[in-house]
Amino acid sequence: MAMMRLRREDPRVVGSFRLHRRLGAGGMGVVYLGSDRRGQRVALKVIRPDLAEDQEFRSRFAREVSAARRIRGGCTARLVAADLEADRPWFATQYVPGPSLHDKVAEEGPLSAADVAAIGAALSEGLVAVHEAGVVHRDLKPSNILLSPKGPRIIDFGIAWATGASTLTHVGTAVGSPGFLAPEQVRGAAVTPATDVFALGATLAYAAMADSPFGHGSSEVMLYRVVHEEPQLHGVPDALAPLVRACLAKDPEERPSTLQLSMRLKEIAAREAQGLSDARPPATRPAARPVDDRPTGRLTERYTERTTQGRTPAPGARGAQAPRASSPRHPARAPRTGGGGRTASRPGVRTGAGGGMRPANPRLLRQRIFVFVVVTLIVLLGIAAAQGLQG
Image (cartoon, rainbow, N blue to C red; front, side, top):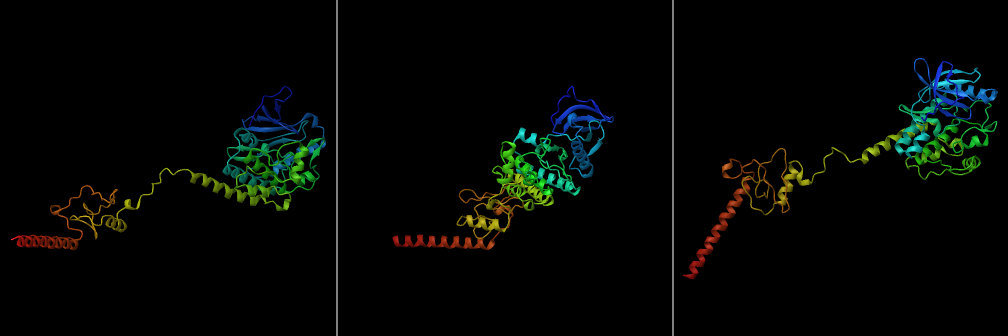
């Protein structure tokens, strides 16, 4: 979060807190970075001097403090102290380090689908706690979301819903942010938890596109688009677009609940994160080996027999047609065939009569010897017959 030096008109001490820097300023007051005597850092909000005498602004400030006290869980900054009766009412919450979602997107560009879904899941789960406390934020937007190391936090409940609260304007000051206000807020209708769902949908679209789904323009133009035109979601990833569009439905009844939204976004975040992991080439997975390079077994034996048909056998051959230089099967490595169907001999294995190895197929060897003897006799008889004819 950007910090600025204190100005001359800024107080140096408020309550028991010493102020160090400015964190920001809004329509209601200024937010400072302060610390107590123990060194605990706080974000301390002080109402503007010109509004301190306005009773409705004091009431709105009191609603913000009341909302902060009622909400439980880690989705918001914890209330530390407050003084609503001071000349300039103030309250202090736990300081949340980290940039706002608006600043992060402005500096780094659109977030990935996995990051948008993860942030949205945490925010929707936080809104469940907010709504269970009977509070509607009414001004959820990227600048009111801080990205702390422990997860996103929702801040600034200054216009949180309360009975009789003004919906759009007060003393010429717009309440809410065009482009993130729900249509029912623009029309002046009652706000409900679905109002925050609409704002969350617009916020997630901004995080995915680095732009508002309703474009840019004056407040009047933006409010008209929110009520009458469909959002532009061309830059939203396909995994998120249908859910974001559902959040931005004009009719509050058609929007998903915060609980449904939380569960669905968690699923998308997990799937997208897994997809990114699967897209990376595996570092340790071995490459697929060809069939003839598999560990030795029956399949390899049959494949070797087929690739060596018609070749002269040697003692120790295996199968019906053995390779020229074969050997007993090695337990850790299979025979590999080369370009001409040649089978490489395994190292460290001797073959032949002196090898002391039993032939893999004695019957086949005897058949070969028998054929060799018969052929030799026929040749000899042929030669003898030829010599007789010549005599």
